[in-house]
Length: 324
Image 1 (cartoon, rainbow, N blue to C red):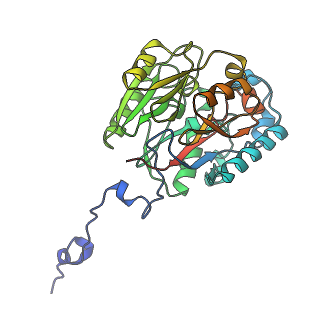
Image 2 (image 1 turned 90 degrees about the vertical axis):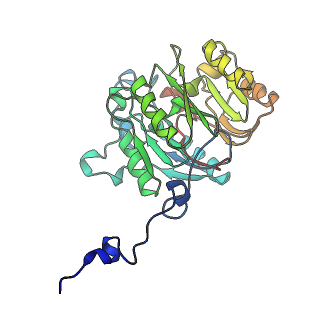
């Protein structure tokens, strides 16, 4: 007698159990439960990279988009301090692991320490970016394999002619993401991001980036609901107008050495109104505290500054407490 396989569970017959939950509903069960839909809720997990021997191969800082030579021993000490700060605040640290890649792809590029640029987290996993410069091309794969190994869904990868770096995307509220377009992120990537986020019920807005900055994160921070820390002399007027229309209180930050040279505004929000910032920026710290923010720790970042980045650039945001 011929077997009727259609009546078995293997062929959607008796015993078949259809999958009925959404990806978001499955987070924490089939997938790691991390998600992000704000810039200010409790920080739960970050991704970092500890530079290795790749730094010893740099012959010209300018050729690798650095400002000055980097001391690897000093950078190692600063990295350990940063890890200790995050762990003391009950923040899980996920370290990019080159050994997850095939042998011929494991050699790390010189800017891999700037993990924030490699992806952006969403309520349903992470979108892998696509670096804008040839110097950083291929860095994305280190983030992709590490996040996947942590059981975090890879929601999408920017493809085609799209170029996107994660520091160009900031949450204005749990339903709106603002993307800086023009320097490191282009229009094809913006179109892809709009589609990816729209499928999660999130609107994506664009703001054109001014010359002389790398990312949106370099001129705007949102450390609390409706509170925007802005380099008002550098930020384009349409951006400031957009923030005001949406009810943000703007904390102006003047152009000064603590901002332009010491990366003081490149801070990380660890909870509503609480931040970790660069060490050695007393004036900026005073301005931020006058605006109601609390500095819970300061981290030495001299070598990140030498590499043309800061604390937030080095910190990939993997998970925050999700807001409703």
